[in-house]
Amino acid sequence: MSQPELIISVSGIRGVVGQTLLPDSILRFGQALGKMLLDNQAIAGETKPLQVVLGRDSRASGPMVACSLAAGLLSVGVHVTDLGVVTTPSVGLMTRFLAADAGIVITASHNPPEYNGIKFLRSDGIGFPPAIMERVKSIYASGGWKLADVNRIGMLSTDSRTHAHHVQTVLQHVDAKPIADHRYRVVLDSINGAGCIPSPMLLGKLGAELIHINGQANGRFAHTPEPVRENLLELGRVVQEKRAAVGFAQDPDADRLVVVDETGRFVGEEYTLALAVLNRLMSRAGTVVCNLSTSRMIDDIAARFQSPVIRTPVGEANVAGRMIQEKAVIGGEGNGGIIDLRIGPVRDSLMGMACILELMTRTGKKISELIAGLPGYAMIKTKFACTRQQADELVEKVKTAYAGERLDTQDGVRIDWPEGWVQVRPSNTEPIARVIAEAADETAARELIFRIERLRLPTA
Image 1 (cartoon, rainbow, N blue to C red):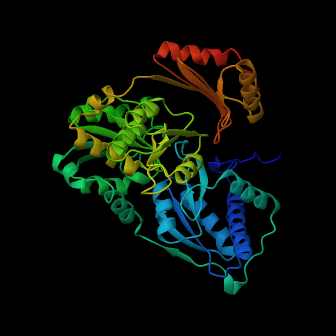
Image 2: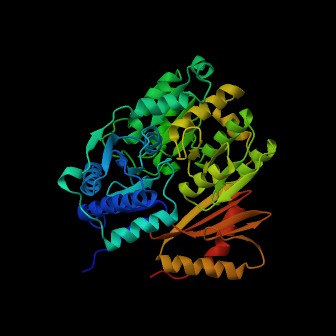
Image 3: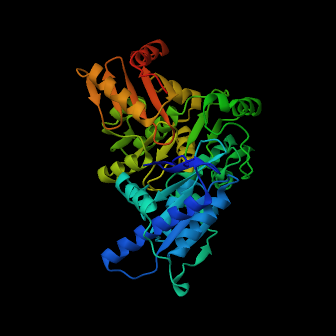
């Protein structure tokens, strides 16, 4: 029986440990990355030692994946610096800080614990674009790398400065003293993931009275990892019981952030970026970049500051790449992902927490009051299992059915009407299709979803 294929996309590599993600295939990915870096070096005529920075979230399978990747890189002559359990944005930050040639994050983000994955970062900390991912995939499939002579095998080292460097970098870009003067009571759910370590450091520097739940970086996820309403009931309850000013929830690799208001109410992952955009534009107007699946709230907020909004396909690398191109002041994705290029071209929950506390301080408003002051929309996100071919066929059917409407085909297809919008796209990380709609109220949004459901192809 042939081995099922790994999911390999612009978001990286993801699979089920022991089924699709196996030690020998992981080692080969390390060797493939090493060969690509060595080939690039040969083309440039350089001879300096190559270095890759490696970090992981707290999943139990993380050490196995890290050791296999490191072995692959070392075997072809590339040095590896192991950061241990760190957040995804921290790896991007340290890749640049150490002037490394690439970075690797071992994480499956919000997927269940049986999953793990590999995310590659360029030397500037941005995720690999599709063309480079294709090169790695091609080398992985064809082989062709040469094992290094015993005297040229790569060296393995460690670096313990990651968390302190990340926290200090964030603090350089917020006005910390006024925040600290408020002594905000904050409840944080780190789901026993990588955010457990640096987040208390940051919030302590910001003067917060921290109530930390699920705060051990042991990989034993206390609830389903995706930070959505049904998984954050405990957070809401604790915020209410402790009369906290705000509740924050991170995903296992701490690149996404979700907010609960002072009443314990889950306010929706789309509001994380909206609040961060509002805070940033209050201090500096400028271009905002977000993906096609992100709420129209961003456009409405940006319009207050005469700031343009540019949309990209889903995927952190797509957003970050366009942010760099446009010199954007803020950007991100509506899944709770904030990207501030002053910190790095990676979604960052630590910067997100600092931004939102700064906004509360700057305005003197509670979270519920800030949310009430934003434009109100209803967004519905649905998904269904299907093959990539079936998802692509549905996209084409939608394009044909709504050919006369305002279409954006950068990523699947998005249709914009005055009353709202709907997007259909194949997932980059799972064998599913995603359908997202937004309108003024839930009834109108469901009607937009229904327009797609009527065209839906039967799944195998």
